[in-house]
Image (cartoon, rainbow, N blue to C red; front, side, top):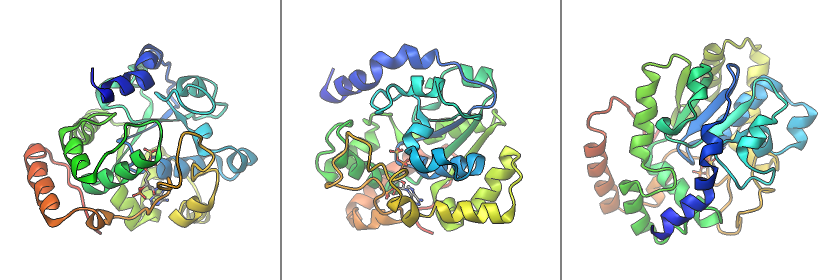
Length: 282
Ligand SMILES: Nc1ncnc2c1ncn2[C@@H]1O[C@H](COP(=O)(O)OS(=O)(=O)O)[C@@H](OP(=O)(O)O)[C@H]1O
């Protein structure tokens, strides 16, 4: 077992059975993403759509309102326990697990799932900076080698390519799965909130939806201590903030022309059988 595998198994391994035996409920909402694809953004949208600005929302950090299922590092204890004890209905639960590792009770209970995907290049950049900042992930090393590790899928939650494709395939057979894109949210948050409401069967006034769209803007979430992760312990915010840039196309500030070409060629090979379409700029 190499360093990465040892670290993975220490953080997530011993928790495996607990997570696999998790008892989902029919009204649960599972927010599934590859790390750094917009999990917190969509979590906060759903949180506001369902619960509005209550006292709990303004005093409790987002990572205690939305349980990170497979995490063992939350200040509130294992994510599975947090999910078990969430007082809300629906319960909002987040996961980064590839589709084949999601606890089976979510399928048995026909729970609702919101998947968020982000283009590979921006996802990679965001993950790189997160790895620089967090103490729960392997050290990222140099950017030039990180790109290769990402392309090879040697990441804590496995290959980005398998992740986005696995969930995309699942969407074709699981009607309660809504597949969203970070780039669409960035382009028109209001439109994506409308789509979410239609999918979830939520009737919210135009005014309420506008309030949500404004509340979840990057600058608002960045200055809000309940959504910017500033109170989350295992991070070094001097290296990089959690709410870093929040942009589509920031990859252009990181990739050299040669790195971009190499990534595109590799992408073509890995995604050649996929009908998924990503935008790397808007
Ligand atoms: N409101 C809003 N608007 C635009 N972008 C946003 C928003 N909220 C979070 N973000 C950006 O999402 C990135 C973090 O992704 P996740 O929340 O999935 O991270 S995690 O996996 O839960 O750790 C991270 O992206 P980068 O800035 O590119 O690093 C965040 O800045």
